[in-house]
Amino acid sequence: MRLVLQIAGGILLALVFALAVRSLPGAFDESRGSAAYRKLSDLSPRAVVDRCGKPLRDVVEPIAGLRSMYYRAENPSSAITILVFVPDNQTASAWILGSVRAGLSLDDTTGWNKYESSLDKLQALPCLGNRE
Image (cartoon, rainbow, N blue to C red; front, side):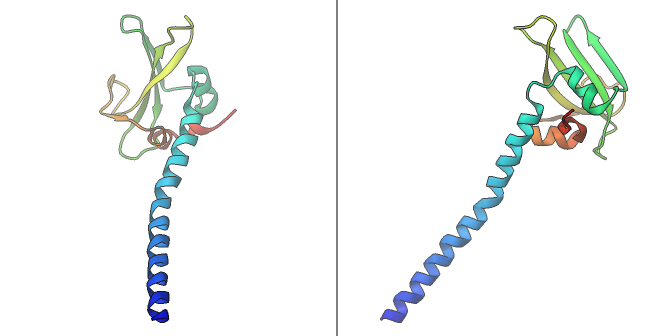
């Protein structure tokens, strides 16, 4: 009887361990996501130029109130990475990163794919993660 209980306890312990190990990759993804978020928070156009160099194109659209910066993509599935900034309502001359999109060319004003997570944005343009 004692041997049966030891075997059952071992099986239960192995199941708990397997479930814990299985959940770890998700925990690592979250921590990378939060680190990516910190790298992109308070990102200004000036900081982008400091980290990634001069953009291929920098367009301020007065009617829409947007600023779009175009960089050569490091992602092989797109040609251009477009960073779209929106005006900061609290500071008149400041900009806030609104979105990061994949574009096909410099004439692409909207981009065909919007990167949603901070980690995806950093993968699209890794130089954004550089700190100067």
